[in-house]
Image: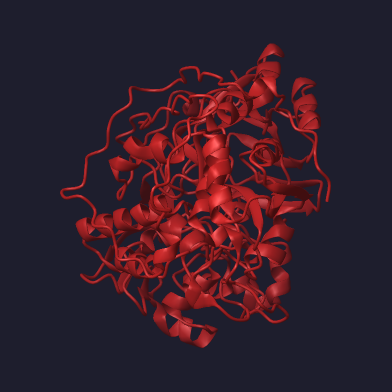
Length: 612
């Protein structure tokens, strides 16, 4: 493990005032009809700070990152803009991107980010996402409805869609595609979810997801769920449509060259080099405005920028600290219509005490909840939060465009947000290294050893510099920090999936989406969970209440209660909300509009127009 050279000097530790970011006027979300009741906690020692604890004055007073609720560009009819009506057809659209976490063409083989980046171009989900306001709108499914308790969902499908190989799409392709998600080799984000909702094996799943006729499919859920339309859409990102006929003819190996129903046709890929797609001129929604699209996979930041400035690519994923350099080279920075990305540090080892004992995954022992883990102590978690200078990170790495992030998984514009988190954030989470030192001393964990995992995901190329900044902050308050560079796929496989994150801290990113979706990834225990960062068993109780209720008020209150639990227990280290941003060459790119609430750096590439 190496200790990196960090970008923050001693002088930079002083307060840096945030500039005003672009956007509409901020609004306060509506308050809940009644204050959220604080749930009774199962582990009292994890909630309470020491009696008589006095707050020390911070080294530098911090101005809170302002809260903003972004509004989307109005699009009441979702009709094409004037730029989209152009008859100009471009040649090859080349986009320089960070290599995905998993390089795949099977959505069941990786994360929603990986699937949305690589699979969504060539095949569609049932439900489309409006590119202006991020809402769920008809796609392959023209309409859908649920029964009163949310245990049965029926989707009505288009009758004029063909796969790229000419075979017709029918309702029979839907249960087949869902069954791929629960294959034995599946490691999809939704694998545990689909097994819990529809069955642990293909036979059981196919008895619960049924084609009623060629254009109607019914989902019969084992437990109530109010989000099935979300799970069937691209915002979720694993239930993409694959051809049952192709599978019947060639088995799973046939999907090495998959046919699809998307706006682009899959052509070829070279691992660590590129993916190539061609235009589907007959797509039911929108044929692309370019003949071909190529994702050029480039891990080096400066190389992606160089390819943009020399005209080798027209679009590039570039870190925000280099945006000024890009604009100086006559490039333009575009951003998503909605707030897109939440950025935070995940505190490792914060497991539900009911998950004590060996991991269920073969080969892993002594995992999950372990008594004596420093991060189980709420004073340690508060100390980590107090040590981090969020305003400096926002200014130095994100150019001041970030907005306040109070609780991981929650945005003020979405159901379940409690305004008290905004009001109390500076008092409870504000930058205060002296307070952090005091908390560590009183906890008995001053000088404990922490492994800082340096990794990155598409959409936030600043994640590694963010980790380097955290190294400086945490070392400054007396934590014995060592760093470990690691690929996200290795972090996923070796640390958080098997429950071995003890003594670690890692940056992560999430998407603007309903809180219960993000909470399932990070705070849900058991097989349905992904990270399992749940310090209190009440998390699971409230999560089930939120997701199984079809009453919006009950759902919102349960989410608010769960957020109260996370906020008061310092469950994570929230940093900032960001818009998704991309750099383009305006001499070659006309219009590029994407919502930002899909778990990928950018989407809706079929709508990108060439410059006039």
